[in-house]
Image 1 (cartoon, rainbow, N blue to C red):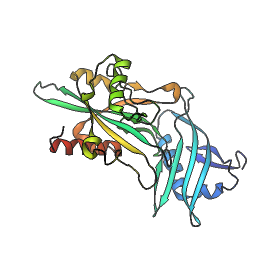
Image 2 (image 1 turned 90 degrees about the horizontal axis):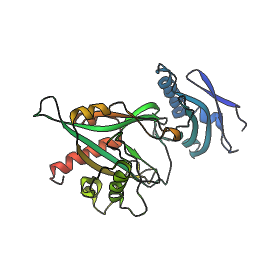
Image 3 (image 1 turned 30 degrees about the vertical axis):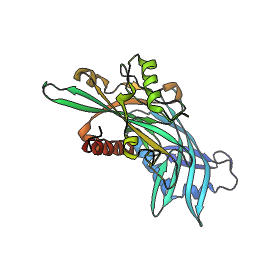
Image 4 (image 1 turned 45 degrees about the vertical axis):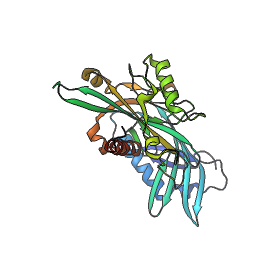
Amino acid sequence: MSEGTNTIRIAGTLIPVSTEQVDIDVPAVLNFQPFRDWVADLSKEMESKVEKELEIKRVEIQHVDYFGSKIGFIKFKVDARLTENGKNVPGIIFMIFYSDEYFMWHLFSQRGGSVAVLLILRSKGKNEDIVEEHVVLTSQPRLSVPSLAFTELPAGFSTSVIYVDFNNLPWVLGMLDGSGNFVGKASEEIKEETGIEVKEEDLIDMTDLAFGEKYHGAYPSPGGCDEFLRLVLCLKEMPYDEVQKLEGKLGGLRDHGESITVKLMKLNELWKLPDMKALSALTLYNALRQEGKI
């Protein structure tokens, strides 16, 4: 189907929708209710911003699966770029329709293991007797939700394991390496990247404490994806003033389309975050503390 034959309107701008697959009925995809809802939600999100942060160039429908005569799964790619530097943001979306509800994920099928870190900074507040606990979070564009600033537990999916910079930007990205010794690799990366020596025993693999060798990790969507999460805990003491300075700092590889802002949230308010990684990590953290395992 030729470029521009079909269009959608996002935040007042006509966006061409195309496909390279001759058997995909693009008009049917555009009429698919979850897709229509996604377009409306993304438009609302973009229009809510005072300044334009994202430019949508095109949408490519890559694959469609059917449940009988009805659309069941759609995988599509959004060509979206940051206005500040023109770099692409992650735009591969997997949309599912099931029992009158739909769910959207960045990747479909075999994704493998990834790491999420519950990084808790402990500090004394203005009252020296009170210890405050803040969780380090990241805010970045997540088109599948869709949100231009989705706040979540730092986590990632890449060929490296974990990057942590406690001196400047405490954000974490990672995926299991071939050896599976991601905790050991994490401590090496922290020392290499920041000069801060973090012993392996300072990084606690909560999924290992909970499941042992029975499961690879926690499975967020076993109905359609093999992805599993290793949930790691890191507790670090830091002066209160230094903790507060972290709020709003910029992180991520902006030349690679990453637009990350560091956020802080009190540990006792983490349950309010609609991020399954954070909720799972918080559940494990509280349960393991009750069991006396951490």
